[in-house]
Image 1 (cartoon, rainbow, N blue to C red):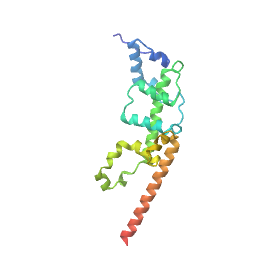
Image 2: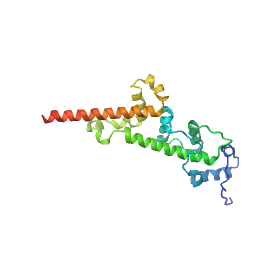
Image 3: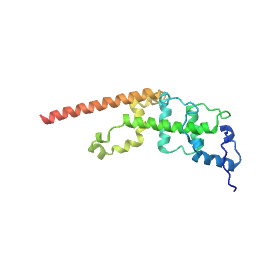
Amino acid sequence: MENRTIEHKRITLSNFLKLSDYETFSMYLIAINHSDYYNLVENCLQINDLMDYNYGLIKDFQQELTDDSINSLNSQIDWLRKFVDINDDTIYLDEVTRTIKYLYVAMDDLMNNETLLLSSNVNDISQEEAQAGLERFDRLGIYMQTRKLANYNILDIERVRNMKYSDCFIELYTQKQLDDYEQELNQIRNNKITNN
């Protein structure tokens, strides 16, 4: 095989997906995976703030990322289409790959905020809870959040999934603050009882 490099000719998504020449297609894939040109983090397609999307869409995407299920360019493009309209004939491949990178970074930031603001402190878990197997619920994290938002009524889960993510996040954060307050208040009361 002769040694060729891709001159960064801009190609529309449509033309890229229609490439029948395996060698050219493969060279673009290599460039997508290794070239800075395709891997800049840039919101070229103007994805909205992720807080403005439906809670269900955000949680489904988080689950796929957590499960490492999005492992092909086609599946990445499919997910991107859920966040923004793409006209394959006018959008360029580099705009798509850069926006995918942006989407991943934005979702990573959102997940880090959830971890920081919504997760229980590891020190808050009692020895009894750990011994009883609290970690068994780790796999159910997203479902448990959704269930809590639905007030533990599975008939309301779909309604919650259709709510705006920001509204759900604010409610989860408020519930976390109330839970922390009640736990600290009980700890103070228990300390007073034991000291008397």
